[in-house]
Length: 471
Ligand code: NAD
Image 1 (tube, rainbow, N blue to C red):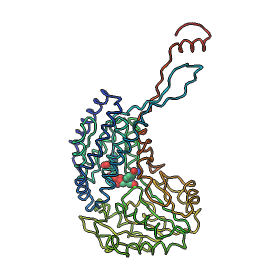
Image 2: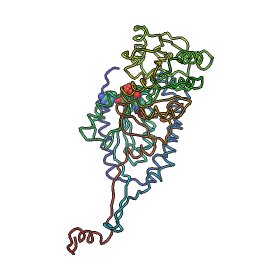
Image 3: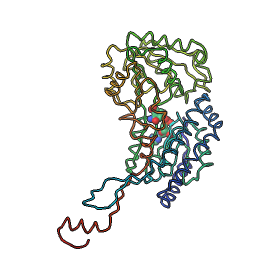
Image 4: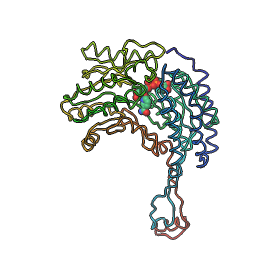
């Protein structure tokens, strides 16, 4: 990617941060009505721009299925805003805490939900609306002001988002700044009251290092290799359909996609054949590679990386199976790739050491489930972990013996789709949470507040010193 001159973008960032900071200092505790009114603008903004969102995603990705644009990037986020609105009275209700009456009489202790202030959000390319406007729901509910920085890989959606936001919100409340890598670097150095970063763990470390210089609290939404384990009896047509169907969402460019599959050795061929059948059966998967259902890979550089994972494995003698039609190199406009299964690749290959984040799927046969669980536990904690099993107790036992950002049984990614559940990583897949009440609290300063009852100070003084008098 060519180096971009970010001088003007950095000046804009600094100016809008100062503007929001000044506005925040004048209104540090927005009322619930104000917060609801702000969040309430989000669904209408998204729905009014539904066609433009589809077009912009198509442009940035080369091809982007309409159903994914609608469901994930538009209606899903609108639903998240609606959920926040339905909960806000409850989330903001004053929470009274216990007070020792003997010591403090009728004194009050409560938790107040103060906004953090001005919050920054660094967004990756893979879900340009879901990961910008999605967290905005909880950030605004918490009473903050927000500056969003889209990815340099999504210039069209970045420009659309800037327009949507400036048409909907005053700049001193929500703003978008677009630019290149120099802007990204400067963004993490700003003295935010909170910084959300979503992207690769390697960059997450840099962002956290920069934020640490200001003691800015961070939420890091990172990635990792999400395993999917099938226990004996789980290799069924329905389960294979579910697993492959979610892998094809965004053609694998999703942080909670299945990264690799563990199947009982005796079921390996069945799993592969069921997958082949899915693609052979006819529409929509028979011509998948060149179809409108296949999301383009975000850039030629990312295509090269994914093709490199497959060629490295093939050179090492690994069997690869390309599915979905023509596996020949994609054109540079749509950048569409087939789904490629890699059968039992050795663990030192890049397909097994790096997060795949695309349509490549290693299938690993196992002899002992315990050994496979030990292998998962020996690696970095994944963002998501999936277990398919006819026995829910067995599935729960696996989940209880592993650690991941979130998990799901007999489905994939549902834990990330429900607005009521907290979402985030563990260890190298991230820290902190957005979505749901946990997201609201993540972007809120939980302020302890106490009010001393009349006469208590005097009584407490006498109690402590034994000396009658006033304080
Ligand atoms: P990306 O290249 O778009 O980078 C993400 C953001 O980081 C961009 O806005 C970019 O400008 C910024 N950035 C890059 N270098 C920077 C620097 N030195 N300082 C500050 N900011 C910088 O996206 P990516 O990193 O390729 O995203 C893919 C990764 O994101 C995968 O690991 C995926 O699993 C993860 N991801 C996680 C989640 C989640 O919610 N946990 C969601 C989506 C993606």
